[in-house]
Image 1: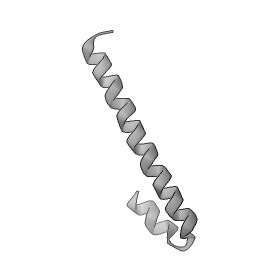
Image 2: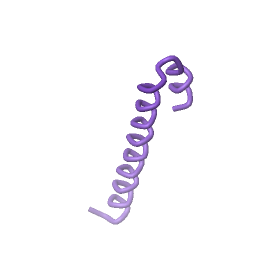
Image 3: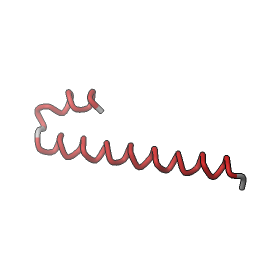
Image 4: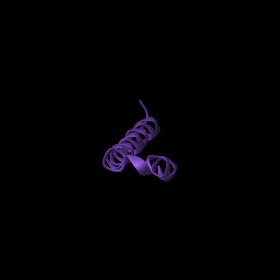
Length: 44
């Protein structure tokens, strides 16, 4: 595995982590404020 491959993989994992974190916070918000769920989905 080349260094470029390793860097690309690491970047992908980091991006996935950020995406998951964002999705989780969005779900927490929708859970506490269901009436604003549509607005929150647009925000995500």
